[in-house]
Length: 375
Image 1 (cartoon, one colour):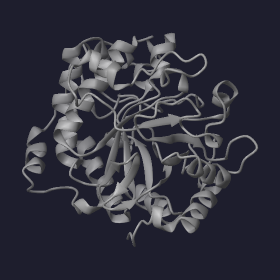
Image 2: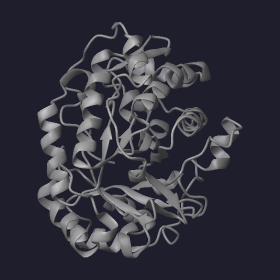
Image 3: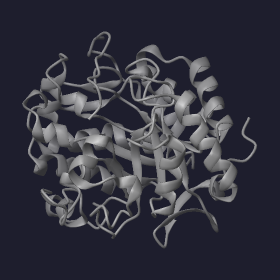
Image 4: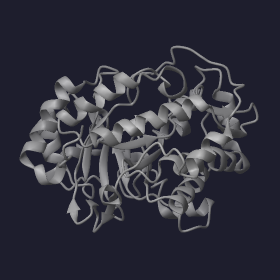
């Protein structure tokens, strides 16, 4: 768990959605992103592959520049410069929060019904994915966070109402997620979707509503089915801890994102994740062991899917440099590591500490990282 995040402001909810913009882009008349299918990341034999070549996610998190960037305070010049920095430091993928707490971009009613997104939201994302393609850096798009449900902002009740009913979840899938996939799903630079940042805290914390796992799983199942039905984008959930991702780990409560758990809420083979994206900080290690020094299996993760470290501190874990953490994660069979963060959004570090690690990994394992020439 990282330091508390706060929204610096609020904007209105009553914004008119312009479906014609989605229609134009869906018909291919003004596609915001174009790229070759041979750049698409897929999974084969428990590893990430691009064509016939293995790729290791030498990654970062660039969660936001301005909280709730997309639809209110997006800076194209800042993101363009940041993606250039990522590329220059050998980073081939970064994790971005598409909505930080749900107050900007998504059109949600008081009862939790969703009718789409604002034109500004789509326009900003169009530019983001153009920038990703320009610099040849893959995006893991985190669609929402535990912050959506947090008492600290005015819209939290709407989001709790949203997840309480399958019909509301379906309205999100139909009017937001599928249009999102229609716009960006054909671009290989949208390589994966993280359905929610650290849902563990939505389940555990009263300030976040203590939403039952069954309701979270219903969202994951319905969204994963839509992603698999409408795209080749990979799907995951960024869990905060092993506790809810393991059937065997000490003090663990069962894998809440297993195929069985999701398909209990929606009986469909598409209701599944493609890989696990564990978050690891030193507090986790005091309970379950130091993940970067262990294989995913030794860490007690399920072995039915590949695993990467979706967040680790950019400053490095206790007793290790970040360079050592990345190399150790690779040697122990993790399929990638994504330092928190590239741009220093909190005290866990920035490219000042992360950059030497990702450059070193690129230099030692160029064939696993190769970004191409970029811009």
